[in-house]
Length: 136
Image (cartoon, rainbow, N blue to C red; front, top):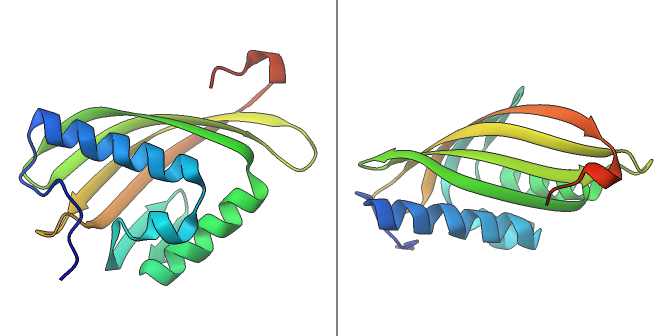
């Protein structure tokens, strides 16, 4: 059985580690690698999309990073308990026309006993920005 350390129940230290691992993974923009942090039957709500299972995660991420160019993400731990973690995040990217965006949001994560993310619920807001206003 595959495991992704650290395992729940989380402490302040292990929850922060899990958040940093997620940030590092997403910033790699490697959809296959990132998908391995999620259970085979993971369930996501990302904005208005519902994604089920690792294969859909891979397709979602490949499409995301083919449209969100020069993507850079920063996550921070908001709260944790047992097998759940809440994070705040922001990311920046530009589209194929060169328009830059900053997106803000919150995610609620639930992990199985093997440390794989079983559920991910993301609420995200986008803001058009000028390139000179980038922070990440």
